[in-house]
Image (cartoon, rainbow, N blue to C red; front, side, top):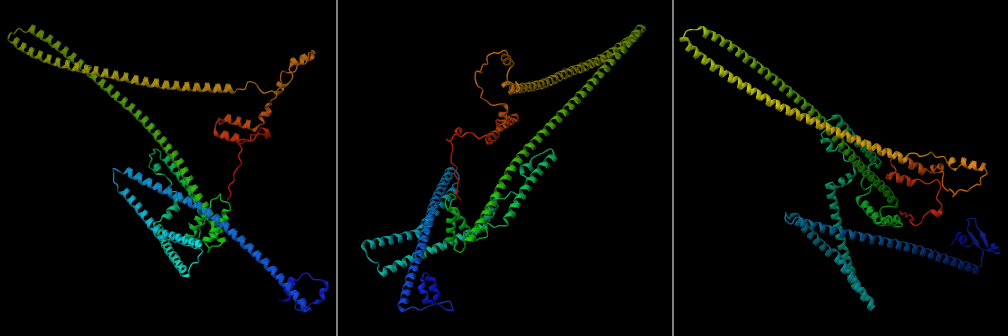
Length: 606
């Protein structure tokens, strides 16, 4: 051992021993001791070394015990978490199985009288999966359970009989255990290969893209209801479409900003798919209410992912939180877009419907005016026809009068001729001629009389019809006038009732007298007169313990309540919330505060 090591251990020495120590140029210590003194120093050095080794062993033992206890505590907490997770997974599996069985039973009951193809396929597939599960259990789980039971039985026999295991039998047991391990490794490899094949198949189907784009905004800015809706006013429909485009552009701009903040982060945050899924499942097993949650899942991740450092885990956790925050923002943005688009769609449909109703009313008004014009035109044509008939009647009557006068003149002439004619052979001819003329006149008169009677009857019938039509039109107009007058009277009556109610409300809230605290609490003239007259002073009947109007108005709750009442909002939920949040000007006394319903606030640990 060198002199430098001696300086490290020999710290206490006496002054009389200094003469035995000689410092050399190289820093070492040379002793001029007797052999007995050297042995004594060697023994002390060995004792000190043994003591330091004992202390180091104790420290190492304490550190190993602390590490072991910490490891045991972590494993116990991991087992507790896994037991809860196992119970949850088993419950979820049972619920899923019961739901599937209920769905198959319901599907079978609804399709009893129809085609049973889909039900039979589901039942056959369920039986096939059950057989596959039983075969897999027999091939993987049953050998391990049998080997465990066999080893436990042998161990119990050895412990009970206090025997030692022969080397050949131990080698056989070791070979059997190794064989089961190899079988389990082969099964695990096959399952991992099937898992990878299934993941590749899902990736080939493009389901991940569908899941990733589930929170994006639908690119269709204008719903089909608005595009297919009929609007008689093109400017109104153009403004509605512009509103939808503006809403979609605003939400798409916000979505682009969120995507830019994510910085093109992929689904697995820069890790491989297996590492990210392992990280996600492990973190999901440890609930937020678990104490030391971060330490536990970090320890489990370091065990499951030994190729990842703690800094990598922290960076990945931060990236995953940022990605979840971005996805949550995208989902909330999509929900807000759907809500705003639904509200805008409802308003747009109502506006378009009102425009359609207004256009229909305009068309009805235009049709009514056109009907009135057509009615007036028909009446005018009928009046003109009646005038033409009247003129024809007057012409026929004048013609008949002229014909009668002419015949009268001819008769007078014939009479004169008859009186002047003395020839007998012409009398017969004249008689025949007169007879033919008389028949002709009678035929013409009968024809004219029949035509006149026909015209008069048609005119009387038309006059009767026109009179009935005019009377019906007057009755219809009178009925509409009465309905308008009744509506006007009803509106006036409602306005009068509204004015009456408003007047009653004004009367209820009218100011009876202005507040004058000085006059109310001051001295009266009678009291002053009695004081002047030397009357005996009388005390009031009771003391007034109340507040003045200025003290009452100084309370902000009173002013806010008065403002809400004037605005008509004093009975709404908004007014209740506002009045509940306003504090009084001075805190209440402790003896007036109730502690019955008080509850201690609970805070969750993360």
